[in-house]
Every structure is written in structure tokens, then in C-alpha cells.
Amino acid sequence: MRIRQWRANRLNVWRRRAVRLMATSIALFATASWMLLEQSTFNTNSLQSFVLNLEIDPTLQNKSRCTAVTTQEEICWTAACFQERGSRIARAFSKRSMDSWCVNETMPITNQAAAAAALSKNKSSWQGLLYVKVPKAASSTTAGIVLSIQRHRHCAVEHVHRQGYVYVNRFVRNSFLLGSVRDPAQRALSAVYYFVVMPYLEQLQQQQQQLLENNATITSTNTVNMTRLVMNGLQSRQGGKTKGKGGYQYNYLSTKQLEPFYLSKPWEPLKLQLNSQQLLTEIHTNVMQSYDFVLVVERMEESVVALAILLGLDDDWREVVLLVASAKVTANNPYLLVRTGRYKHTCQRKQRPNLSAQESATLNAYFDSPEWYWINQADYLLHAAANASLDRTIYEVIGERLFEQKLADFRKVQQLVMEYCGDRILGSGCTNDGQVMFPLEECYENDFGCGYKCVDEALNRMKHG
Image 1 (spheres, rainbow, N blue to C red):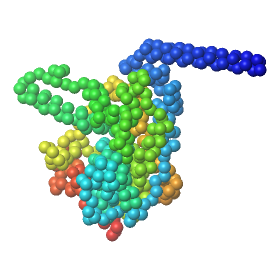
Image 2: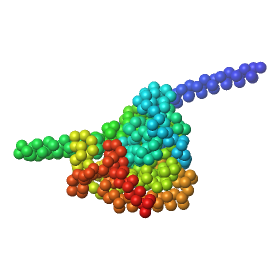
Image 3: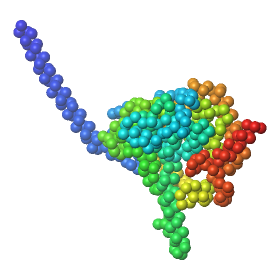
Image 4: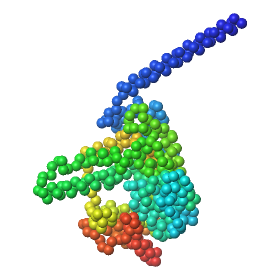
């Protein structure tokens, strides 16, 4: 009896000592952690230090490396890592019969009422071909395809700039949700040039012209620091910054309204909220499983051919041949016909600024920095997933041999249309020396599907010999 009592007393003593030791250890650990955080700093110029005790090699020479955050699951900093992660959430898109999604265009669908219903989280009436038009991700050219499908197949379509979450309550069986993605850096630069740089340069050019008319001298204050202008644009919403939502395209395409996954600037300690596995799951749910197809801008020909096969539009390519042909001619013409606004029906020179070697190096360094990859983490994963999904669709659904045959047919038809229409298919309406080409080629809307009559004429001639 006494022995059992003595053992019980000793056990209680050791329990109390263990509790005190654990409390002391926790206090010491918390104190040490706080001291480390107090001493840590972030150098925004070198971009060598990141959240908590994460260290990044600023040269990023090992392109196959994934870097781990000690307090969370690892996140990606390299192309190889994004590709590996994106392939995990890739899917093979399915074929859809025309009668499953091609709702007659005369069927009453009140867009404003549907949008209001979607925003109020009530059941909406979205049906037909629904294109989520991400700005500067081949949006105008893809809108041309969508309108071509409407014209030839008489299907109800939506192609305005409207974020993906608006369609969250669509009738899935009676609709086809289409999106497009582009390399995040290239999309951001295109957006910055269009929304920030071009308006600024136009205003600057007008100021310089006024100075010349007044015989004033143009000084350095009347010129522009292009690097500063572009970098400021990249930090704006037009450049893709989405206040911690992972990137412009993911935020735009997501069928769910997103909450920030970090609370402040991404490099500030104690602000890290991202769990990489959770982010992958959300991209998979909100985009890859919600959309019926996602075009990859860098692989536009393959994307268009795959889309046409899935939708059963690969008989004569009439609805889709316009797209890539138009893009290729546009690249060779220095002028563009403005079809809306104050410069309507005039030819304006494309003013994509020429960057110096130093300016290009500065931008390239930023696009290869931890800050940029962190801000656009979801966009890079989404872009990689869309690429892998296109591959899976080709190999698993269409078949590699059939796809190669269809791709060759598409390119042949496209070349014949190009030879027949020449600059007319461009829809630019401008000669290489900046003169308006009359009569102007008609477009479906604005600059969407310009030159479609010439495309139809060329295909009809091919069909009847």
C-alpha cells in the first residue's frame, strides 16, 4: 500500500516538472522567434530576401528547383516547377454535341437579368456559348470566333468583358463555358502598353507638338522614363496586380469570387497565407473543372483546332479560320484602323515602345524575381494546367494521328484564305503606308471578326472548285 502511494506521489511530481519544462520551452521558442523576425529585413532592390527565413537564389540558375517555405508547403519559383504542379490539375476536355449547348439565338435570354441574378447568388438563366473575355489574352480574336459561330450556327453567345463568377449558376447542360489564358508576363506587358503606356505617349506627343508649334525647346522633363512608366503600370490593376488573389487571369476566370491569400505586400513577414495545395485545389475547382475548354494563346492554332473538333465545327473550318489568319497579317502591318472613338476610321501607327537593352534587362529581372512569381503564382499554375490540359485533350480524347491530320487541313485552308484575301482579312483596313483601304471590310462588332465576308467568299470558292 505504501509502495503504491509512494509511486503515485513520484508520478505526480514528474508530471508537474514536465508541465513546467514544456511551458519554459514554449516561452523560450516564442522569444527566439520574435527576435529573429525583429532582426530580419527585406531588401526591395536586390529581392534576395523573402518571407520569414526563405532564401531565394536571385539568379535562379537551377530551373528545375522548387523552393520550400519552412512554415508552409512549398511554392514554385521556376517554369519546371509550375509545369509539374499544373499537370496535377490538368484535365482532358470532352466532346460536346452541338444540340447540347447551341441554344437558338432567338431564344429570349435577358443578359441584365441573368447578371443581376448571378450577382445575387440566385439561379440564373445563362445558356449557349459563354466566352469569359480576359483582356489582352486573345480576347478580341476569340470573340471573332464566337460571333462567327453565332452567325453560321445561329447559337446564342456571350462575349462581353464579364468575369467568370457571373456564370457560376449557368445551365451546365445547355451551355459551353470558354476561356483563354496567356503567359502572365506577356499578358501584363500587353495590358500595360495598351492601358498605360500608349495613352501616356499620346498625351506626351501632343504636348511636344504644342511646344514645337510655340518654338519651345523639348527638355528631359518633356520626355518619358519608359522603365519607370512600365514598372508603375505593372503595379497597377491593368498590369495584373490583384491585391493578393494570385494573378489577373485567375481572378478574372474564376467562377468563385476570390478572397486574398495574402494580406499585404507579399514579402512582408507574418503575412503569408498561401497553402500551395489549397491553391491548386481552388484553381482545379474554380477554373479547370468549371470550364468546358480553355484556349492557350501561345498555342492558338492547336487550341482552335482542338476546340473545333470538340464542338463538331471541323467540317470546313468556316467558323474558326478567320482567327489565326487575322493575327498573322496584323503582325506584318505597322498601321491599324481605329474603328471606334475619336480616331474612328483613321489609320494609326502601332506605338509599341522600343525599349533599350538596359530597360529590357530591368524588366526581365523583375519577371524572374520572387516578387513577380509570388504575385502571379495562381496565373502561372493556371497557364501550366491549361497547357497540360490541351495535351491531354489531343492525346486522350481526339487522338494524336487524327489531330495532326486536322491541324494540317486547317493550315491548308488558312493558307488558301490568306492568299485569296490578303490584307482584307486583316480587318486593319490600312495599307503599309498608313492609308485607309476603301471600301472598309465589315466586322461582326467593333474589331471582332473583321473581313469575315472575304473569308466566306474564299471558302465558297474552294468548296465549289
